[in-house]
Image 1: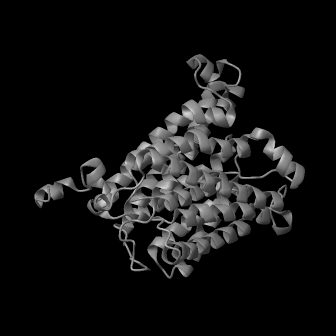
Image 2: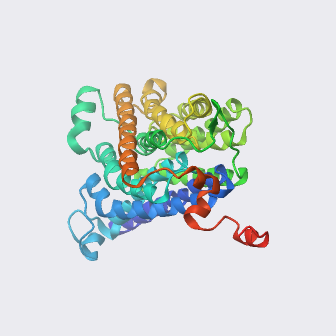
Image 3: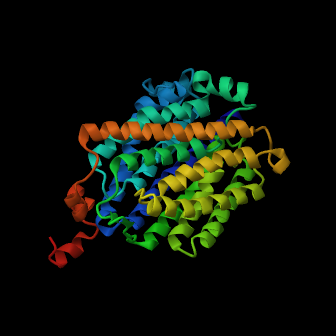
Length: 409
């Protein structure tokens, strides 16, 4: 029975890892549909290479920083033959699962700095983010590193900071990193002309919608399988994820006046927000959390990109940064027993921890992208932006056969 339990847990977490890995295809197609046609190939290549670099640095450096585990031992030890490694290679599928979370950070940032960031500079930033910066916040929240959970949250704020599936650790951190990167990079050529915002339409609503659907489906692995064991699985997490998603869709539908881009991103806003408290909220609380997130995304995307002139192409600061921040705080509201939640949560801890996570992300974004800019140069020239990253970086367009047939190359 013990062997069966071990094997079942390995399979369970492996399926979760595969679902979250599939979400990276969602990130790719969401960006493909939102950017202009001349930058579609670059969007696809960025997400895939980001994942490869993230996995490499997380394997050799990042996971060790977060959890104190090194994989530089024998295969026999890795499979459970040494202290610190669980039977049936469970520690390895756990790494795979958490690696897909880590790789989401550069995938989030990619959407904010699309169409004008240099490829090599972005890859270096990915290595620094996933290898050094992200493991610090991950280790503090999910492994109680540095004693911050005990000393600050439990000791002073009435309870541990809770983030079941990453509203703060993944989404808020990544979204606020993206804000720092966008600030350092500046707006796309021609985005703001003569004091006003110039509309740049998305290349493909169907591809954008496909990206959203892929992310929504994978998100149930992201949230539900964060329990990391079959015995810990909870139908409440699945139900809350579902209710937050539909709450986000309906709120974005109304607030965004039927705009399809807002509707499809509204689903993601709800899912981002519910991650932190999906294991402790009542489904009604999750529905409200998702609905608030849908409105936050629509309003803040328009305000930031049009009035404040922050050229965040996919609205990742509004979607991940602000909705993630709201989700961390919402766990401290709708997780309370007085509001139908499971309890064992402190509003003060959630508020302070959420703000600290967002602040850390912004500081990391400014620091890393400033360093990378000074080393390699972060921004494509105006002429390169006119030509598009597909041809400039990859020497091919999204439809090469059509280009040859029409005599464009």
